[in-house]
Image 1 (tube, one colour):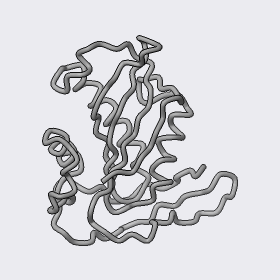
Image 2: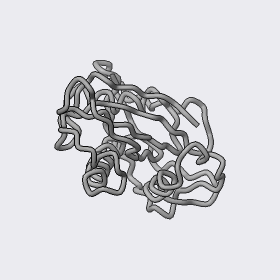
Image 3: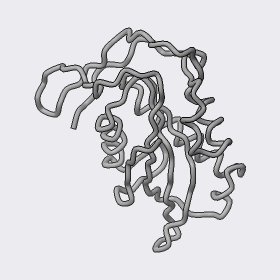
Length: 187
């Protein structure tokens, strides 16, 4: 797996990003759309300058090659639906997106997962969508979330960042299991 060595030197403000094309949001509820837009922010439709490339080193290779960008040059976001299992007790309050339990889980996972993506170019943001009980184990929950990305569209790189962290077994203060992981493009 690739390891990311450099952080972008420019941190964009929330006013630097956004999307004018509302069609891309049709598949999501209004609440999810607003939550993701707040996290990713808004910007006029224009290509943002890349101020610094992110150097990556393939495991064991030692070369500092730049990560490929799938040849995409677009200001439109892409979304990936992810699922994974947390070793946390389930409560029905986690189904209510307005409950303090859901909000806290969303905030904590969002903050930690967003930090995982700091080394990648562009901007990526995680939004918690749903929490379900794992029927076989009442002390595990299946988490479903969306990762939105702009200015960087290498799905393998985006997937590997989260997948590598799941192998470690921790997302912030949460213990995470490797089973139940999925990563799917949708638009």
